[in-house]
Length: 421
Image (cartoon, rainbow, N blue to C red; front, side, top):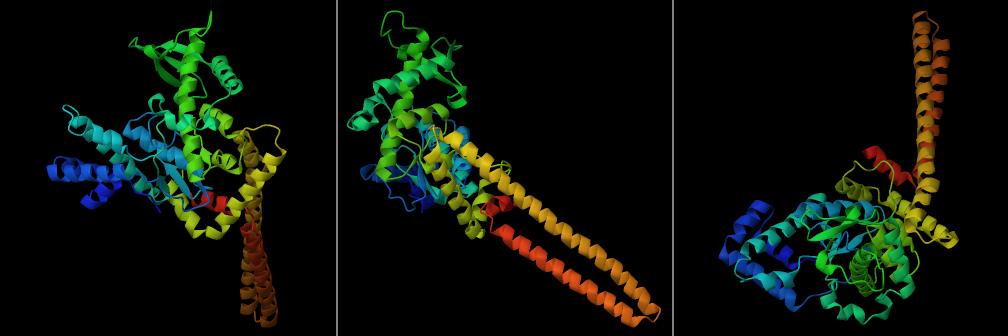
């Protein structure tokens, strides 16, 4: 069950179902006043909702509907939902994300010159919520307030020693950024882009005034900018890990460097880490809404599929020399999922071939039986027809048995999803 936000409450109370109706409501002083009241109620009691499923996960900052590690444009945040559910639909039942910021909204209310900004804020967040509804995923979202991932609000995170990077971990992560990173001056001359394949969209902007002074003689600009990038991702990861522990749920990091930082804070790889990074074959064109509907209609085969993934992940984690969940997920796909799908396809093709051969044989015998009847050879026709019927029944029974055996395959749900497309 979705833990609704203050914006949810207002949209539903006002009966608003699209951006046009939200725009109209924002022009009404009474409706806007009720929106402020909803935010104030939420601000007075910012509840951390209790998860309702043991198969839940906390979305990391690159996927949690905020703009901390991703673009804040409503279109981009809506696409975060698409990206998020490509990671979770096949295993998880509940996903914790961050709702609209009531504190920031209330701070801006009544400030001269910020009305247009408030309207943009409300419309942008409404667009994201409407997109979630259209996808059919709203009831799987658990909106929760994460600790702010910024230096100004660091006290809550600083109180947890386990959320600090060790000197060794900091060194490893900085080397990782330096080895594959480069900097490029921004066109407005106010900062630089730090470029690295492990970052969201391959780069992150750093203002000139954020770049620290050299820590030692000869420290390169690249390393100094890398320190800024690492700190940003560490603050995000610390906030995520804090919330993950508070809710008692695993954490899903959406980009590679985010995942590396989280791993330094949270320890070893878990089954949930592997499941989150599993990319399933041939399902790119199927809508999440259709996949979730199929989960419900094929619940028994879906549960078998999910349990098989869990067991495969447990076995590989126990035997893995490394700690890369994406690599383990790729092994499961290559060693278990794809071969199983191929077996199902071959068996179904073979079963269909048996039926077709028998149908052709039956048609030939039926034709001969008709000719015999015309010539008066009824006993021979009857014998031939009886033989054809027995063969058809045997073929049907064999095909049915093959299909039953196929339906027991742990990957049958995934094959069903592929065929539904």
